Amino acid sequence: MAKSNKDKKGKKKHVNKPSSKKYKHYTITGDVVKRKPHCPRCGPGVFLADRENRMHCGKCHYTEFKGKEDKR
Image (cartoon, rainbow, N blue to C red; front, top):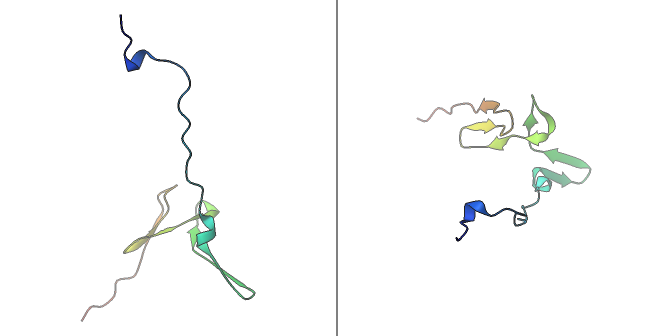
């Protein structure tokens, strides 16, 4: 009797995950350190994603909408 893939047990194959790229959220010019906005709910270290019309936290789903521009 042949075993199917569902019946196999044992170690799972190790998958390397990409490392965090938090260094991209900081800019150093001289003595000034600029950083992207962080989530007011989660605190420093959790950055807001910059979308087309909003800033969004992926952890707690906090959203700030950007102001609408007058297109005339």
